[in-house]
Length: 239
Image 1 (cartoon, rainbow, N blue to C red):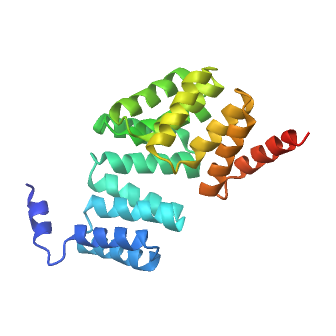
Image 2: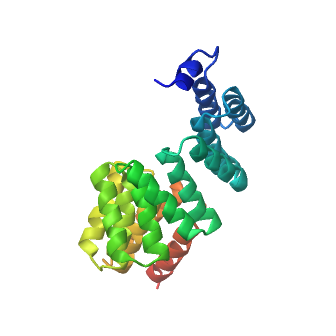
Image 3: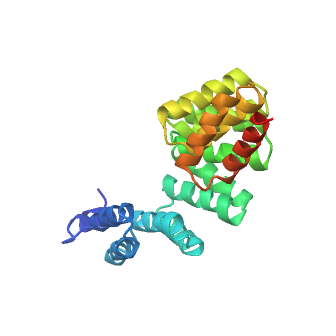
């Protein structure tokens, strides 16, 4: 155990305790209290990478503070250059919010080198290869690696199903992946939408497709694509 870790355990209230409080308050939707707790963790030990990573994740996901989150992830990897999760989080932010594809790939690649068993990191990298680089072969390899790392990680099945459906025209394989994603996570709205589209356009089963669109919208009322697809389907059914 490092001398610094030993000192941290002797704090009256350890930084990890404030992180736990922050996570709990965030889950309850009490964002000011959550941020205050994360700030306390940082102040208690300004070199503790975990505090910055959790505060950065909170700023990104809950507050929409992109620059604040980026600054925290930068500090996390500065204080712990082997912190795989912080690189993965920064890579996701760079991809989704900054459009910095080279930076995102560099972070995700390093995260995978440091921890080659994180399904979410493989899935994020696969999305970049699929959506941005149109590299179907390597995107599929990343989705396969994600599923190999965690056979219960539903988003990887959904993403692989979309690739099989759109790029490989493997309809049966895509349907099996969508089914598995929904089995693992019945709240995954995108999987219902994707499966509905497949049933609508590829299988010619409008009734089953409508059921999937309805479920997608009930889970994600802001999923505009599902409303549009459902409206087209209903229009065709009324003819």
